[in-house]
Length: 437
Image (cartoon, rainbow, N blue to C red; front, side, top):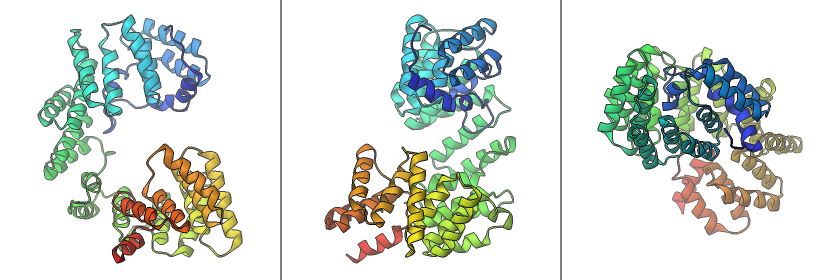
């Protein structure tokens, strides 16, 4: 491994590298092609030590350990492949590709290079490239190990799903299921195929079969409802949520999903009633307490929302979501002390997470509410120049434009954000205002 790895890549890897090697195949519905390829490597002592070396930014030692790991365990992937996978899982797709491109020159007949390149292309939604890489891995003519056969089945199945090549996906997932008859993951993948074909009853039955093997998988009705919730034109979503809540194995996530869906449809009052019906066991969970406070905010019950978010913030001071929502409630107060507290909370969140749209947008909104429109304008302009903003951020920007007399520009933004998926507190009032015009 003669390449240099930049300090940036090293720091990136250090943050997430351990997580990337922690999950084995068949343990969840999120198995990828590389899960099988790296299953053996995860247990190798030298690989674990290499991970620790990366955390300490000791790249020389990391490389040495990966070479040693391969010497002692010939069945694991090449050192460059492992390193590229670590970088990729840590979010460095471009850097991982650079490692693999160089390795392909040094070892042109290793099919794992192209499997991993295919996985990266798949994750970055370059589906044709992903397919070509997978075909290249096969065309090399190397006698496939069982791990390679599994990896190619998963990879080509997922690519075919995204390309809507249903028969190809069915064959690939069928091969996967034959190779791993005792795992839930291939069966769950077959359920996803049925779901995308809108065979909802077939998907429910298949998901239930997978869940019989792995009880940690989502409840079938809830998973189907979550899929349908992204399709506003589909009127079956609520039916699936309700069906899931009737089941004996209904979970807190089912309640959360249905309540959040109601809120997103402007039915905060229904969401509030449902929140009160949640069992005491669920009501005491952080997630449900947060959702209850959020629903109160949507209903305009700021006193209840403030208490809910304040209690959460006190119990979980590192909870960014709770602090963010508390700041948004406090800034609406007429008490100067609470408004100052809102600014403190928002600024603290930005210091902790300076690249998150939510924390930045909240800080800008609070600046606007406190009378610093110029500061808010600069922050929002910079935010909007980097990435498409969420509906909530769009609402904030529209209000700033209104305050500056740009009514038509504000209206265009509001008309656009109500058509987008995603919750924002003012959705109902915005819709009502637009209908009156």
